[in-house]
Amino acid sequence: MTLYYQNLDERTRQLMLDEMQFDLDHHQLHISPLLSGQGQMDYTDLLREAIQNGSDETLAKNLREHRRIVRTLPRRRPKGEGYLIAATPENAAEVLAESEFNRYYIRALARRAIEDGIGELVVYRAKPVRKPRPESEALVESTLPAEDLLTDLRSHTGDEVPALGVPSGPNSGLSVRLP
Image (tube, rainbow, N blue to C red; front, side, top):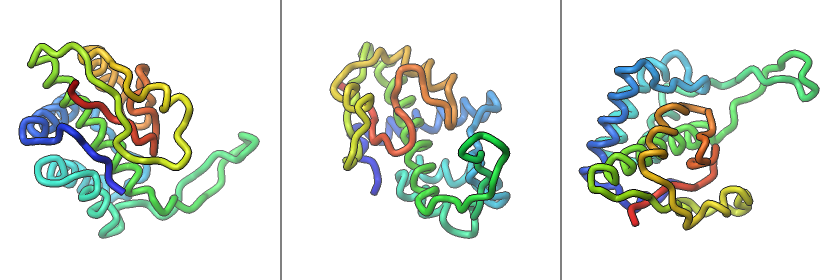
């Protein structure tokens, strides 16, 4: 299920592309370990296409094709002694696509707010979840400074949880909107 992006329009999409280019220029575009060799080669173009004309659902669909997601991953053993090989979760493409598309969406909205003189963005639940995390629920309807949010997400790429907590990890379902 795709996230609902309240302010996804042409202006936001252009700012998302600008933020993606920022990452490319600074050599910090997140290449997930979930991506196969083919996925790594195709990822930049697939992400760009989803930002221009699609959504996280479009990106997930394209990642599932042509063996772009690895079938197995090394996982640390439960007691921390070595590694084992585990099957990649069935929803890996969806989780990766939602996470990355949402990060660029949030960064774009932060830039948009800054440009428009709007100081804060509002956290909302963009995807319903059965068992919301208490820390995620505590953030819903709170506000975050746009400049701080942009700085936080630019410095915490990929799987790193941002200091401000939005997005708050895989499958959190949280995003931001203009007030």
